[in-house]
Image (cartoon, rainbow, N blue to C red):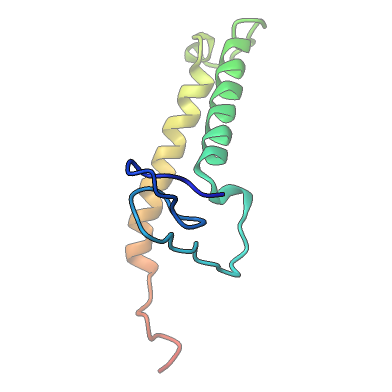
Length: 108
C-alpha cells in the first residue's frame, strides 16, 4: 500500500508522508507477560478497589457481636487492618537496618 504526500507523489511501501523510509520495529525474543501491560495492572488495581469497597459496604449488613466497644463502629475492621499493615511495613524497614548483612557477606 502506498500513500501520497502533499505533492501527489507516492511514498514507498511502509513509509509515511513525513519520512522517506519507515524504520522497522525492533524484534526481541523477550516473552511478554500479562502484567507487563499497564492496562492490565490498572484492571487489577480497580478490581481490588471494588472488592474492598464491597466488603466495607457489607459491614453494614450484619449485626456485630463485639468484645470491645470500638469494634461496633462502621469500618473499624478495615481501618484497623490498614493501620496494622502500615505499621508492619514501617517496622520491617527498621528491622532491615538491624539484620541486613553486607553485600559481600557470603564471599568472605
